[in-house]
Image (cartoon, rainbow, N blue to C red; front, side, top):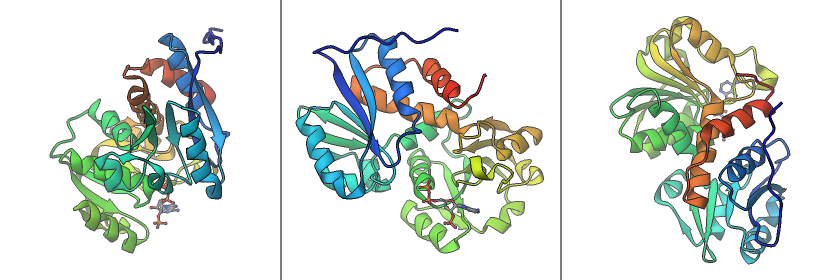
Amino acid sequence: MQTTKISKINAQTKLCALIGNPVKHSMSPAMHNAAFDKLGLNIKYIALQVEENQLKQAIKGLKALNIIGLNITIPHKQKVMHHLDKVDLFAKKIGAVNTILNKNGKLHGFNTDLQGAIMSLEEHTVVKNKKVVILGAGGAARSIAFGLKQNKAKVIILNRTVKKAKKLAKQVGCSTMKLDQLDSIKADILINATSVGMHSNTDKSLATKEQLKNFEIVMDIVYNPLETKLIRLAKQAGCTTITGLKMLVLQAAASFEIWTGKKPDIKLMQKVALKKLGGTK
Ligand code: ATR
């Protein structure tokens, strides 16, 4: 079996880190370390579990230690914004940061979740002017909705809790419909931005095969299992499908580029993530 060669740690090694809670199942260390090694960069990536009441001290410490890049995950994506020197316009609009660049001691925040979603879609279509249905109105739906709006797509948000859908739609500047109106919608793209279909819940899909026949492209943010019920039904309905793994890899690639100014080997990152998830393709 081919394994990725891990370069040695020495006195010049730079550090990147993920902070969140929990972090121990994260795919990011494996993906980034493989990509750093592939480009011969003397950088290592580690995952650090940080409690909510320790966030401020953690960021101060990471700055003092000159950690060059950070990923931020649940539950810190919103609160971390208070501790940064500069926040990118879209991260500000979304209200969440998942990537930080330490540039000469100043911390700049970005949100690459939206790039992961848009780049995944743009591998198959031009997003501009496309009609896109987003299922969900949580943090993930929020990044995707803002990203799509920025790229001039026509977005419709459907969520179990209608009040949340309306609130998000107002902020993004798009429309909403009820989940039970899915039967009557025909659009270019459908995106599941809810947790429905995830490992503990694999027999569930918010859309039926019949409903999915009204869409060209179906994307799921869920990457565990690799093929969700939604993706399986979408394939049966003849749709082009995009898995959550693709989005995960492309958001990581966008973070990598922010830290290093270099494009990582995306195929390698995907292979590494796939292996960790137990996939073979
Ligand atoms: P995240 O930040 O990952 O998006 P979140 O903010 O908790 O997580 O949002 C989860 C989304 O999945 C919400 O849109 C939620 O719907 P509600 O706003 O009605 O809670 C949606 N969701 C979770 N479980 C669901 C289910 N069983 N059926 C429908 N929607 C569900």
